[in-house]
Length: 477
Image (tube, rainbow, N blue to C red):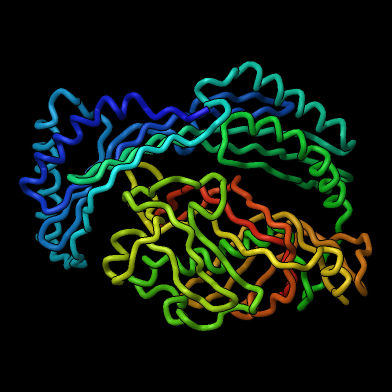
């Protein structure tokens, strides 16, 4: 069925249009982003149950952006009375003029930016979803997840707890200007299994997840992860320590996604180009990876948690080829950064919520597939590891350093898995060297959307990343 667009947003649309008309008397550009998002979050463990209508993206509010004399200003609110848009217009004028007065008194020299274009455009999108979070049978969900937790406990004798998380978010957003009217409604959902295990004082945490552009029907897939998580827990409890050094590695699709996110995700967010804080700006058109390294970024390059129709600045979603067979082609940018750099926006302007600033943010960041089987990849490794599961990662866009913490490594000797495991693993390197060493890639490719990405003042947005199995060289410790 279609994910129905918010009746509330449809109700206030005429009044918001009147607000834009009133503000246009004083400003050269006025846009409105209005959000109305519902959610369901359920967490079940052996010790506790939690049910909430809140997820990180649940909100109802409006942000207005205006332009005057080379400067932009914004004002957010969630107390709009559609019967009196004139009162809100007066409130906004007073607040925005006070902002400008404060900047002038403080001697701040703002970055002058051209006015955003405002071509006529109309869009109304309601994406498919099975069951909306607001319509879900919560008691049935709780019972189902509780049974999964119990079943998980039975799969590993060392299990202390088995936590099952399930979240679904119904996003409705409306972007209006004098000439534009864009509406979208879509649902994304995430499910996860987290098992805590202990054996002889050795405590480990095993984790796996599912995600997708769909409703709460995704929760039916969580149980498919139980056996894999229990087996991962056993491997972690039996893992040894790795001897630091440079190794041939094969990254699982999840680890490939972590590398994509940290290596050329943040590194080519083009608001960092404006601030001269990313080395990637100096490498456009140059080789940064092997011929097997092609990377896409955009809301349209995967059907996962960030597959929207337009971003929070009203730019239509895209599918950007950042790296094409090893050559860095472009980055991704928000609308204001695009104006400052003289390029087209890519549909990557995202806000944590209506009260937060729009940054250039990732959506789906994916390595392209290749033609090598996993079996052939393993057979080609003389001394190395198959890396699985992720903990965290971080990058230095200014110098292109990368650090990824990987959950588990499976030892490969002379083309065969030995059965020995090591954990945890810290992978470090210089991004062009790491991507330049990619020598094989599998046809199999996956997307993972269970996590969030932080930026700025730690604003969090939903992202997904992934790719195929990749063979490369890296420093492990």
